[in-house]
Image (cartoon, rainbow, N blue to C red; front, side, top):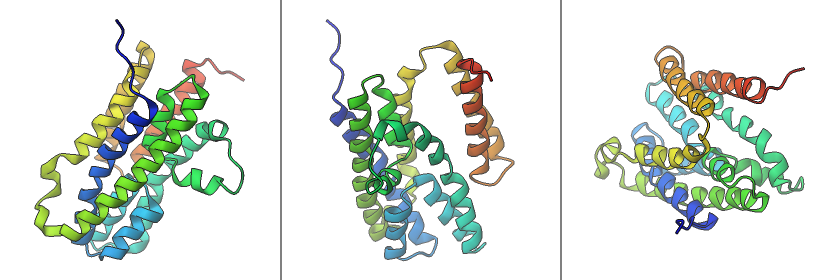
Length: 225
């Protein structure tokens, strides 16, 4: 008998908790970098992009200043624009709701939505439920991390970053059912890792995402003008 697949709600909640736990690290590291509790929470509520937030406080911690920190976070956040291209026709909301949809357009909401193809209803549901779950848990655990601060020790010792990455990988892995997609994913991972040692934060992700997207559209899909 075939295994029953978890519901969209269960997947969304699981991803929300796994990703939210990583917020403990952000909260603790943000306070260590010199930001107070409310500045830390403002980043999680308003910026709400984990990679960009870590890039911001990483630059702040070096003493480079606010402007370089903003530029670094902005570069890393541009990847969400690629997700918006895909999600816009799926979410299909009015202009009034669009800012909320844009705020919830993150790695995890896009991944859960993608995993529900070709069921449009579940794609849309996965996007909203996951975005909401991540937002709630990310901000909750950011608060805990910021309040507990030094009492947590070194946040990296808990491996929370690995938990979030593992949850994300688990979502996209079933989609890599073609050898060419798997090769593209592996090549992208190696390229991003290599470039991260040479270029500022954010740029490796953009370069890799742009090349991967172009290859997928024009190579894998055979799109030609």
